[in-house]
Length: 396
Figure 1 (cartoon, rainbow, N blue to C red):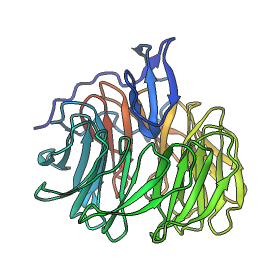
Figure 2: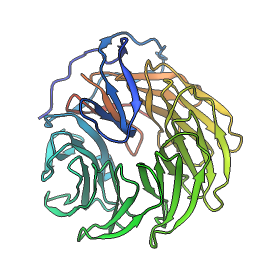
Figure 3: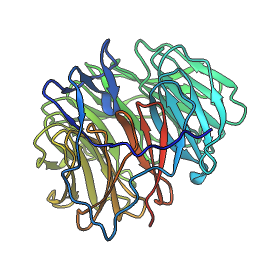
Figure 4: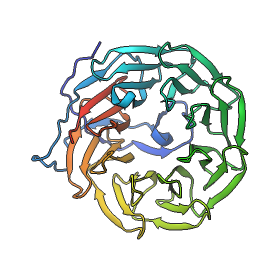
């Protein structure tokens, strides 16, 4: 069924005592957030938004659909099947598949013994992979819900799990010093990517699948050969741990986001640092390229998202209005809008060109773990600690 929607305030202001700090794993008494952010102590009070919204182009601030059924926090929600289906993962130990139009739950994926922190579909969407605090990743048949294999051997919770381009392998990330590659049919470990001297934060494939990029608490990122496991390049220059990294669409560049208040653009083949993006006043939690790789978008603990020119490194635009750290920012598929998710429990949509806030999405009763655009850019999907995922209509 679909939960009722109440018009409750969504923006919240932290009172003294709330601390936000990066960490690599869920710790007792703390709550894990995207990028491993952990909140400890303090209380939250409702408040009105301090940022103006363009009334002429504003979007609805309340959800058009609520996906209910989980009994604990929804850690991740993603679109599949061209936006017609939705996958969710939850701290209740399950993942679920919903119909995006009706809100009905079509499948539940069981088998984990802890909080499920990650869910993703294979490229052909026939399989689903989950990552869990029980130190296991599992591969399921999407339609039947049957567990095909368990990817075991991790020493810590599996924070990320990504299918290869052909869906035959799964890349996993934990707080260990290496990433692992498994056979998605048998669960057999086929490769390890070693060399870091501290915990990993992320691991991802290059667009062609031939390379793996890892980021670490040791202040470096590394690029590996997927097949051989050989480290091809070590990206050195950050002065603090690196939360995440991503490839440009053509695979020639890498962007890294660090606690040293900067993002860096690197050339993949040479390891040369092309630009250092230094406008942020606090840690940079995420950074990603636009579809044409002409712009970079960052999210920072200073409460802002920023857009930079890749060639010049100049900050073209600031997206302001959040009251606490922005832990994620992304371009819409057509690049005309920017979506931000913050520790202030708000999700905002901005006009890319002007930087104007077009809308603030409301209706969550607790912290928002993440938000993403639908493939056509018409909707936004959020995942929240209030045990629901919600769908908002944005328009073109």
